[in-house]
Length: 203
Image 1 (cartoon, rainbow, N blue to C red):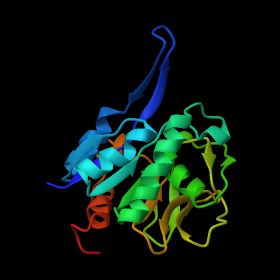
Image 2 (image 1 turned 30 degrees about the vertical axis):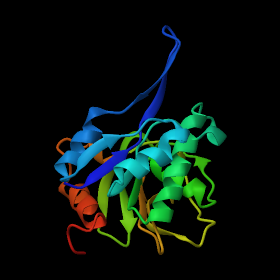
Image 3 (image 1 turned 90 degrees about the vertical axis):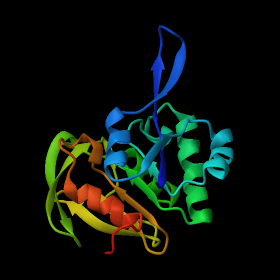
């Protein structure tokens, strides 16, 4: 079985004086339903290379949660973990998928700016572009509306111009602003997307 490592959000528990890594259990279940073994990775940048070298995963997923520090977030260790995973994905040509904050990390890594956007939290809206128009969920405050990098291509947008799906022009790197794990039941289109991206179904 192929393995996919996935990141986790950082939660601060003041009463215990702890910073905890955590992830919605539905993320692991979504990865399993897609046919892969899900393995969470801690937000410890110093461990990323060792974990990657030992596990040699078939894919990487950068998940949602926590704004980037430059946009008001408070989890610098997560920013650095995402950055190192993106670098290793590029170096080893490991398929990398980022959703919501994960896509924001990809956009930021390749030099694109995010802005504050209204009406994108706990709503559904249509996305349009190269693929079939569909309704998606939305749970984010920051987004990109104009790409600066010529390495990244916009695949889908919302009616308000927000970029909702991207892909790298030459690397196995993609992103969506919607959360596949928050659909109940999981959408067949999202499952097929992951299988195609991982090379287990032909385009």
